Length: 126
Image (cartoon, rainbow, N blue to C red; front, side, top):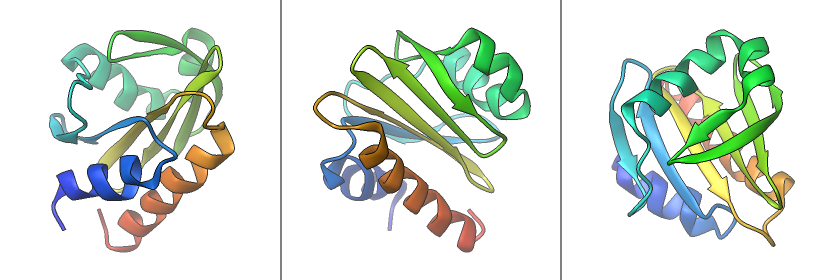
């Protein structure tokens, strides 16, 4: 399966994610939803957030130009909120899944989908 298919089918196609991207841990966008532009600066901040969860907890993150507050952060996942909307970021062995959702989708619904794909990718060393 192509990286774009993971975005289109597994993430956005689930109906529990509004837009998504897959970023390489070493840089670059592997796949993304149309119009979901995660800038190089945002990519770097996202990847660094997994190395410094406390810092991202304090400062939040900007994704595709939108500022989100951090609900919780660890070395493997980051949950974000912006009003009724939010984001779920999951680090795998070689990539970061970046997914945002819009109300009425709930954080728990999006988290199950994104974490599930993250678990699968880690199981196949991606």
